[in-house]
Length: 342
Image 1 (cartoon, rainbow, N blue to C red):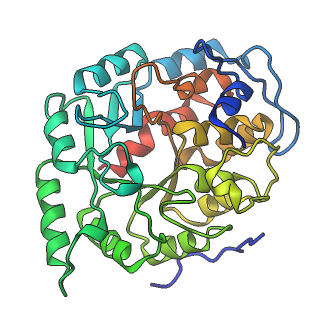
Image 2: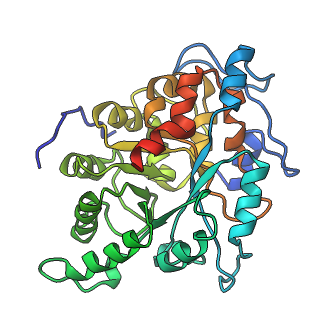
Image 3: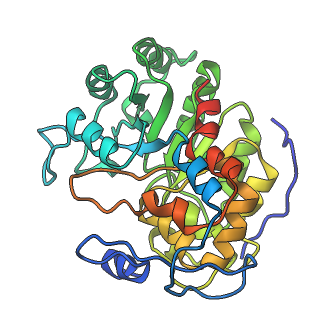
């Protein structure tokens, strides 16, 4: 398909512990508060008190629904990971004021050691239909493709009939524009399923500058893509290296990154702020992030990537950390994901 909008393409570390310390999360689990500047792309990160907001705005935001677009359940049989059952997930949600959560399936070697098949996720979330929203996934390398994609079609139809509302977490070790993945994109378009994908140096592969992702966005305008992980969020800045696709860059953000460019150019791409990659993108240069949130709140989604008990989920402090209108926060908290799931 032809592009809906043309845009200029740019072609132009730490360990997890160091990143957590840098953004203010100590080993005890406390979350530091970092000040913001006045203009996107200038200033440096520094610890200070939370940015003051009008009390009426804070109250309005606190009363808004909150939907987490990125959580998981962990089966008892998983190696090297403690299980996370549906009751524990909902209890954690209650503790953190999260009303509903998307539960993602994991079904690819790149997700090791966690494997959470779609059929199992659908079975588990049935206990909380008003709280949990199941997504499904299929690793295209495990399927036999027929001329009419019958095998894939039948499997997805079964998942949709059982209540799957989206597709993900898509984490296959293939180029993001691989023909086998394109089959899945076409079927997701047919079923109206948003696609949440994880892109880094091992999965949903792309080059620096995200040219393959842009081609996918242009080719499948009917599919809403939700981008997650290192290779996506590194591109919030214009100065991306090959290694950044799997790391947490700490330097200040250089304006002109591919993430804001793609958000401006395409209305079928959204950013999932979950995980350390999303949090790092918003806290490595908070002066820039303030303007980024103001400009792109309609295409940004609250998420945590909750996987285990005791996990740090600093995203829950986001609403006290930046100064947005109640209307902008509503987009990030629930309104945009509700629209994508309609």
